[in-house]
Each structure stands twice: as C-alpha cells, then as structure tokens.
Image (tube, rainbow, N blue to C red; front, side, top):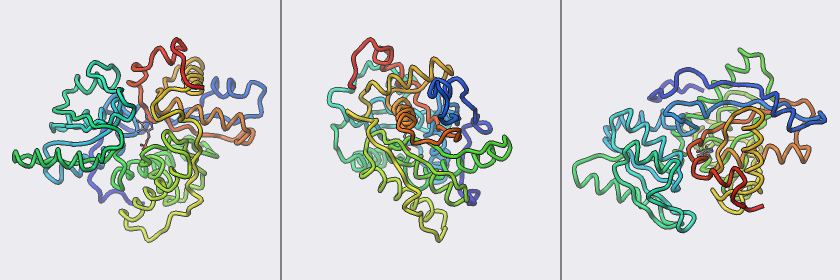
Amino acid sequence: MDLSRFPRRRYTLGATPLEFLPNFTKALSPHGGGPNIWIKRDDMLGLSPGGNKTRKLEFLVADALAQGADTLITCGAPQSNHCRITLAAAVKEGLKCRFVIEERVAGSFSETASGNHFMFRLLGVEALTVVPAGSNMAAAMQTVADELAAQGRKGYVIPGGGSNALGGLGYVACAQELQQQFFEQGVQIDRVVVGSGSSGTHGGLVAGFVGNNIHIPIVGIGVSRDPADQEPLVYKEAQAVFDLLGLKMTVPREAVLSVGGYWQPKYSVPNAKMVEAVQMLARTEAILLDPVYTGKIMAGLIGLRRQDFFKAGENVLFLHTGGLPSLHAYEREVLGQIEVAS
Ligand SMILES: *Cc1c(COP(=O)(O)O)cnc(C)c1O
C-alpha cells in the first residue's frame, strides 16, 4: 500500500517501541498456560503526551495546511484526548484551534476540570462550545466554520476522533511500521488487541493488515458500543481507507471482530475491571493506562485470557493508544478510594 502520494506532517521521531511484558504475562497466568503479552507503545507518539490521534493527525493536518486553513475545528467529550492532541498539532503548526464539546454524561463538563481539560487551557484553545449529548456534532462544527468564514478566516473540520478515511491512513502507516518491526525484531505475533471507538484506529489497522498481507487476526475491544453496533462502523472505516487508496479490493467481513461488555455502564464512566487492569499494568510493568480507553481495553484482554480465548504460548500484542492525562481526572477511582460500577 503506497501512502507516499498523501501529504503527511511528522510528529514522532522514528517508530514507537514494540516490547515484551514479562511481569504482566506472569501475573496474567500465574500457573502458566496463558499467552505472552507484547505491547506497541503508541502512548509514546509525539505531541506529548501523544496517542493514537497523533498518527491520524499527521495526514489530517497536512491536508488542512494544503487547503490553506488557519484554524482546526474538531469535537469530543469533556476529557477528549483527540481534542487535546489536535490542539497540540495546531500549536506546532501555528494554527488556531476550536472545539465543540459534547457533554455525553450530563453535568460532566467543568471549567476547572484537570486532565485533558486543563491542557486545553494550558495549550491555548481559542474557543470551546459545549453542547448536550446527542447533538449533531457535524452541524455544530460547520457553524463554527461558518462563523470563521464570515470573518475572512478558514477553518478545517476534523471529525470526532479524526476517524475518516484520511485519518485511517495513520493506522495503515502503523501496520507498515509493525510489519517492519516484526521482521527486524524476529517477533511472530499471533493476535492483536486494539481499542475500538470512533473506529479510525481499528478500521485503519484492519485495512493496513489486509492490504499488506499481514495475516494476524485483530480483536477490537469496544469502548462505547457492543459488536452489533461497533463492527459495521469499523468495517465502513476499513473499506473507506481502501477506497481512498484506490485499491479495487473489498475488506473481508470476517476481518472485523470486536468484543463488548467492558465499557459499561457508559462510555468514560469507570468500572471495577478497568481499575483492576490499570493497577495491574502499573504494578507489574510501570506502564500507565487511562480510565476511559486503555484501562477498559486491557480489561478486555484480561477477560479474554480468563475465558481461554487465547492459546497457550501465543504472542498477543496489545496496542497502547495513549490517554494519560485523563488518568489525573479519575485518580481516586483508580486508587479504589471512590466506589465504581462493577
Ligand atoms: C480515541 C482513543 C481510542 C479509540 O480510538 P478510535 O480510533 O476512536 O477508535 C483509544 N484509546 C485512546 C487513548 C483514545 O484517545
């Protein structure tokens, strides 16, 4: 798959590490018979603290610059990593940045919140509009773009999570980076576990694996939807990536697999399995997960191990997609000092 004809800005020096997790592997299967767990450190991407949105924005921001935009407009939840990383990219490029924040959990937006919200203010977001859950986000962002146009400015609208076909190219690039690392490090990975939300990461990775003949199954852990709702989104994203690349290929439906049950009671609301996962990785490998995404995604990996989903001795790669700042917005929950849902 040739990505070189798409303009790209680079926000990370080199590849993110691919590492074995010996202590976590042992803690997961104290009596043996379990999988070996590896990690791809996409929490170490640029636009610090970076994450999966960094890869998508390399292509999206390059497109915004090519179109002569002076302002990035995007949307997300009150603790959105995507909004914060988009703002960081804007700062680096000398662009302005505006958000539409969807208050998905009523009353959850606070002007004085820490975590990502604190960083919105520190990095200097130009304006931020808060709308209620279920609002038409595309329309709300278009309103912002129209306001800018009336002032002679030019906004570039980036969809939630940066998940359109162009953003998905970031995870095709990640698939190619992984293929090179498997080769150079002599690692045979048998399965990949990835988070599945707005679907650019999961869908882009599926497109990158299928398109590059990487025959490793991917399992997505839903962070806001169960499979009946999530898999069609991921499938659509993967196919949109193929179409953008001009590949006359269809994504096989069976390449898209997701698992539900770990995100409840609600997107972004803590649960006990997340707390266990965050504590376990911190205390075995000193790697920090976040409560909204990667904690629930790792809880999914732990749950699949306990259901004997993985074969003994197989090499399972966990894709760490970042999210560190929101850990600070849920410190007491993660320490077990505030009760969370079961
Ligand atoms: C956005 C996000 C995800 C989900 O990725 P999508 O591409 O939206 O599916 C996972 N982890 C973290 C830390 C994120 O910020």
